[in-house]
Amino acid sequence: MLKGERCFGPKCAIEKRNYPPGQHGSNFRRRQASDYALQLREKQKARRIYGILERQFRRHYAEAARKKGVTGKALLQILERRLDNVVYRLGFADSRAQARQLVNHGHFTLNGRKTDIPSALVEVGDTIGVRPESRKRNYFKDLAESKILTKKAIPAWLSLNAAQMEATVQALPERDDLEVAINEQLIVELYSR
Image 1 (cartoon, helix red, strand yellow):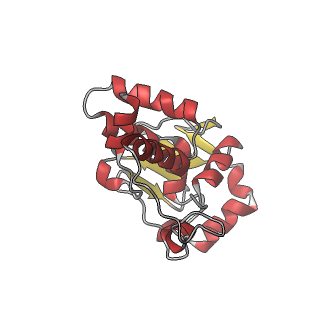
Image 2 (cartoon, helix red, strand yellow; image 1 turned 90 degrees about the horizontal axis):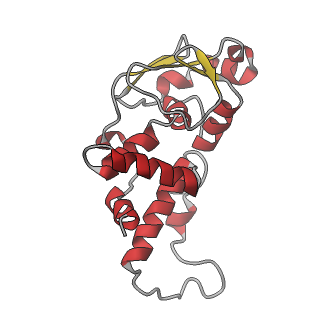
């Protein structure tokens, strides 16, 4: 996936050229993909969207499989509750990779404590905020002055106080709150082989 908002618009390279690269790519006839190929592609898409490695993804899947209820929904809920994803969804970063780097550099607090673990899972009632020392940095000053935080659409399960640069987790994310099109059933089928 491309960085930022580019892949959600008409300039997305995947939408413009939906064929393999090279001299013969445009007249290439594809065979129908197998079930395994579709399942693997869906898992890889989810991994790339959230920017996590295979080992982390397997750990998240194992955790989702242990929970009661639908495994696919639980997996997406876990991926959506990661701290780097929450920072991206709140509008503090333009991409999940940038959000991961901001968290990794220790610019955010989770329940008042500095954290630099992008994979930390937020729970209902947790507060995520920008550290007071980090608010003095040009990046966060520009973010506050440009009023981008107030313009960005924030999911219903989060509430943001743009003036304080703090957010609270109101509820767990639901399937409808996801902005990406992932067929989680294919991922579950892949891991249940």
